[in-house]
Image 1: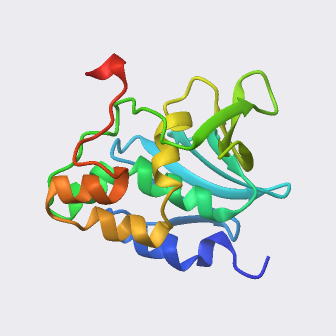
Image 2: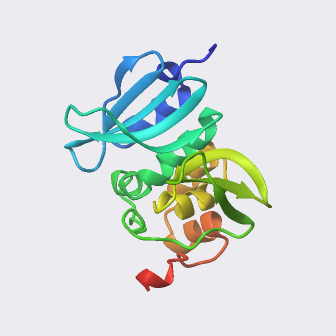
Length: 181
């Protein structure tokens, strides 16, 4: 790979905005502390795929996302840290970290590579992005995949919550699932 994960400019920009330090495990694996200081967020490349996941203390990372390219993993990083990022920027968090969202328009799921995974599809076309079948990532990430990682950072910096919601969701409110109304 010409651009290793440890040298990725976007990741090197995002993590310090979260007031976190990047730990380089290898040129193709980095980690940093999440909002729970006992949990590490990981991004790595293995066997032709990019992964995003987390671990507690010294355990190996569990996978939340597998993709054919690094871009969806960067989008997942912003999604997973969106409230923390807004907090670190002295902006009002959205409160989406532990809430379930509706799936974004034009997005769907199809069976993944295991009985426990789904592939995200846009306009019924497979994207090569796989998540856990019962994970909130399977729905929440679809909103973030509609924007480039760089645009997601711009949206996170929008001070007004309604304006930021409009930019991210296309509406002035957060599209929570019925389970969380």
